[in-house]
Structure formats: structure tokens, C-alpha cells
Length: 493
Image 1 (cartoon, one colour):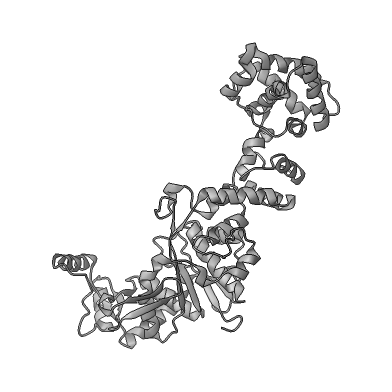
Image 2 (tube, rainbow, N blue to C red):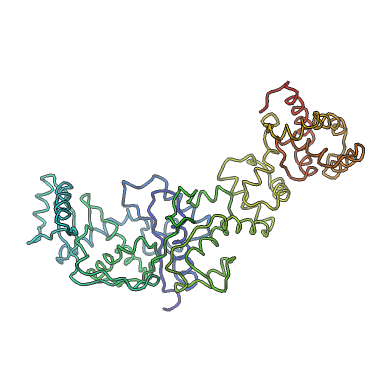
């Protein structure tokens, strides 16, 4: 294959957010195109109006862009093979249906749903597989017009070939379907819209697609597509059907095992480059026992012959470990950019913070796994003073234990903190250390009561940095409120 001639496509239906299985399909197509200097096409297959979800196409586009999988042709970027919304290609599909009818390779059918069900019931009673009985002679245009006027549904069926069809799959190997297993399937519905089978084949051919990488669930339909290609005189692209993605129990991945949509992982605070690296390994192996890969390394190493036939398993613990390592290794600039994206796509207490503040929070929370950990550890800093809710277990353990030792410590610290200047992490740490020496106690006996007072829990970044970022007025206000709450003078939360 000459450089640049390879053309692949990702063709999702706008029925919801991008599933990780779809993201893997898009990624593998993108990697193959980038490795060969080819073209990656995005096509929105939106002709099934009953299942379309308003705005889902934009969500799919946003998900792909967040993953960094930019397309060369498609919505928002154009191209010579458009339109790239299937609903805008109806005339093209109808022309192909008309040609198949004129050449005697397709025919009209007028059966009602009840009549079709009766045929299936008879076949089942006779213990036979149902195959639609091809009429003889074939109905004419006049017959179709008469059926429509009578209110009957008029569809167009493709005349299945009388020969076996073998799918020479690049992953699964040769898969043969015998002629007696092929049926006269519908290629145009009663509303005049082409079915998935015809639209998919026509659009792939018109767009010059040379390789089709898609999920294994489509393999059973591929013989129909090859039959259509042969009937229309189109070349057959190379097919590669990707293994299924299962959960760790060996079941097909679904929401019962947790979130499975790209947007959910984005909102859960994962880095997009980590998710891309992880899903690349779902069925594909780069070799040499390698797992952590940059995008450029994936492009260089990707090949169809290293995609396995066995089902892949989605190991959430492994993904979390990947993200923990990547966050620890990331530059401050990369973390800040990703953190701002996380803040923009969900409700957090960090909204409105400037870059310097966010960068300081990230540095204080180094070692986190995903961005919600940052919220759990430092989010309290950006909530209202009167919105802090004191955890009863933390109050009992730190403030009330030992005859209210923690409360007594806060009462002793309050005037010292009120007079402290300058209000810096270093000065705060020095003050707390001096109190430890005066009272001959460990730092925990001093810092933990303050931590509970300002956060409501026993978890926060280093106490000096925490109070410095919280600022003096808020620190004092929270300590005073904590003392009032523990004395029963104010409600908790």
C-alpha cells in the first residue's frame, strides 16, 4: 500500500455518550491511519431516527477531542467525500437502491408485521430457520405503488447470492457463511430510509474506505455487506473485527460494573492520555511486555497482527494504577491543564479559583490517584466557613477524647493564631512546634484539632500550607465555629 492511500473511518450512531468500546474502535482506526500516513474519517450514522438522542453527536465529538483523536475528514473539518452525517446522504442511498431494483438484484416486499410474524411462527413449528420467501415474479413499481395506496408497508429487500461468502478477517481469520444461511434482508425501510447495511456499505465505498476496524459484534453482518459490495461492483475493504471487552468476571462490559462511558471517566478525574493508553491494551499487545506508552510509541508499534482473538478484560484497578503513576510523573503544567478541564466538566468547590491557587492545591495533594482525591483532601478550603460539617467520629476521636483535650488545645491556640504575623506556612508551622514544646506533646496533639476545626475531618494537606492557603480570617472563623458547635451553641453543618 502506498503512503497515504489507507482510509479508515469511525462511524458511531448518536444514541448517547461514547462507550469505551467505541473509543477503542476509534483509537485503533486512528492509530492505523497515523502509522501509514492515511486518512481517519468520522462519519455520524444518524439514520435510525427512533434511537437518535438530541445533541449526542456533539457529545461524541467532544469525547473524541478530549481523547485527542482528531479526524482528518468529517463534521467540523469537512472533506471531499462528504456529507459526513448519514442523514444528509439519503439521496445517494436511494440512487443505489434504485439501481439494484433496476438490475434485478433487489425487489419490493409488502408484508405487514403480523404477516411476517406468522411466517416465522410456521417456520418454528416446522423446526426450520426462517428465510423470507422470495416472490416470483418479482413485484413491479406499479405493484409497489398499489400496495402503498392500500396502506401496506413497502420495503426493498436485497436478493441474497446463491454462493458461499468468506470474510477474510484480519483478526479472526477466515469466516465462511454458506449460501443457505444468507437471507433476502431489507435494504430500504418503508419510510424510504436505507437500512444500516446498505447505508454503511454505500458510504464506505463512496468515501474510499480501504480498511474497516470495528467490534466483533458486527462480524455476523459482514457477509451481507460483502454480498452488497459484489452486487454493486464495489471493492471489499480489509476487515478486522476487534475482540469483545469484558468485565473482570468475564461478562460483557456494561454499567452494572460501573461507568463505561468516556465522559464518566473524564468526570471521574482520569487523564485522557492514561485512558487512551489503557484502552489501547484492550485486545492489542505492543510486545516486549510493554504497557506504559506515549501516543507516538503507540503509533509506531501498532499493527493488526498483534490484536488478539481472545476477549479483553477491563481491569479498573489497573486503570487506576496507571492514572496514579501518570499523575505523579506529570509536569505541573500538564496537571493544571487537566485539573481545569476536570473542574469545567463537573461541579466542584474549585470553580473560580485562579491558576496559581489551583497549582498550589495540586502541589499540596501530590500522590493523588484521580482528581476527586484532590477534592476530598483540599476541597474544604474553598467551601463557605459555615458549610463545614464536622464528622462525629473525628470530633469524638480528636476533640472530645481525653476529657475534651482537643477542644482545650483549640482554646489555647486561638489567641496565639489571632496574633500571629506574618501568616505564612513557615510561621504557622513554627508556632505549632513551639506549642508542642511548651506542652510537651507530639505534633498530632496540636495539629489534628486544628485540622478537624478547619476541614471537619482528620484529612488535609500539610497543616501549615493548609492554613496559609485558607487565609487567617477563615482559619480563625472556623476554629471559633468549631468550638461553638462542640459546645452545642451552633448546629453542625
